Image 1: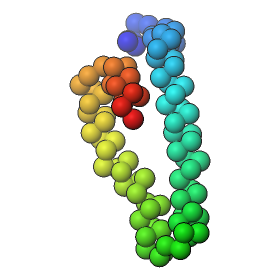
Image 2 (image 1 turned 90 degrees about the vertical axis):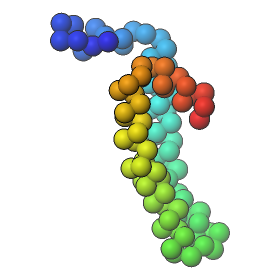
Image 3 (image 1 turned 30 degrees about the vertical axis):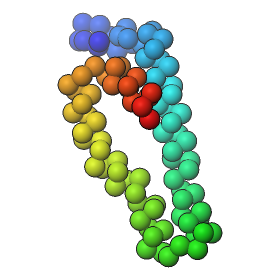
Image 4 (image 1 turned 135 degrees about the vertical axis):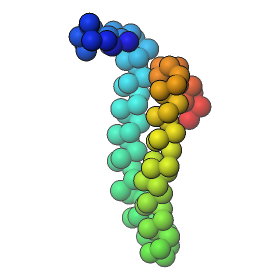
Length: 91
């Protein structure tokens, strides 16, 4: 854990599990942000109405707004590493 006595880079940066989780999380969000702009085009090809296309495109943002505060509270209460490992295998 990082503290004021140690520098930022002297914390848990060398923990292989933490490094693997950080890399997996980075790839996950990169791929999500690559796919999300394609949702409206895919919905248009399927012949959906503009309202439904808007709902599909905004569902990612609405879900993030609703669930990120809850995830933040959970990560503050429990170990972030344990929480990430649980969610990595669950999701």
